[in-house]
Image (cartoon, rainbow, N blue to C red; front, top):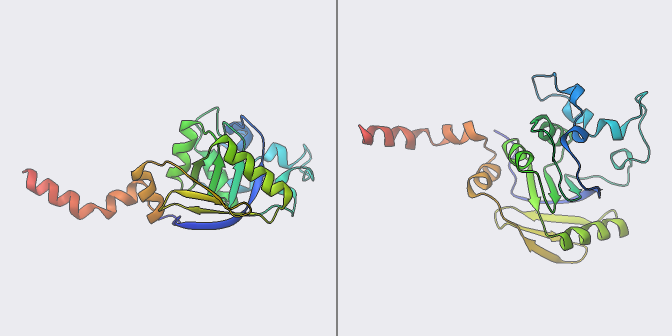
Length: 196
């Protein structure tokens, strides 16, 4: 069971960069681990730290100004290789939602499989979020997954978003694919009995 996503209101962390690939999200040298523990510590590792391991004060995750459960990223987030570790790093850091105007498909699916909502908005809505956060880092977003809406609370603007109904059900109920099957075990067994 994963943590459920229902309605989340949170400040956000802006990363207004386009074409952020999975090697930037979690560098390849960290892919040897076989469990998910510790990946959040290395999220955007080469941007967060210099070669000696010192924090880069210019990188957004090292600034006290920005915090929250929502990462707001530029267009085409999660491109590149299909490593699931990128979703592990996002979740491990504490992000529940990533907002962008476009996600690579494999990253999008890996995120949902690991309890992170990749939320697609229009380029105009995304620009509005970046502008609001730049004007006031305390700006919050409200994501209502059951009703499939996102609201920029600084401007009051709301936009609807699309999501696969099965993946939505899993995120709302904190289930992965195995959990979902186990939750429906009785129905599956009944179906099998009726087919005999």
